[in-house]
Image (cartoon, rainbow, N blue to C red; front, side, top):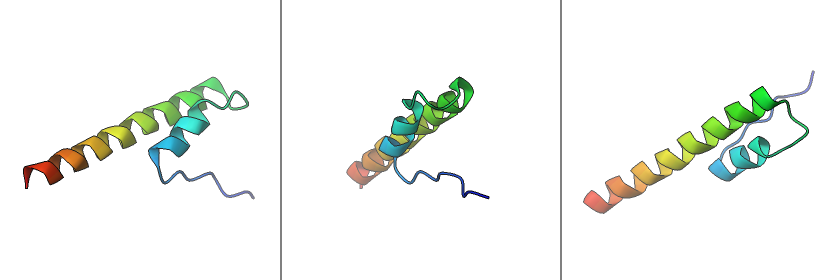
Length: 51
């Protein structure tokens, strides 16, 4: 059995979300994960600025 794709960065999630070969529902999940990763990066940067 193939191993599932694991994204470690937001841009990887975005690439999967934009892949026309994937089903629409799977692309939507990847898009949501990309947004969540971007928000996490923003929160991390903001918390560093407050210190």
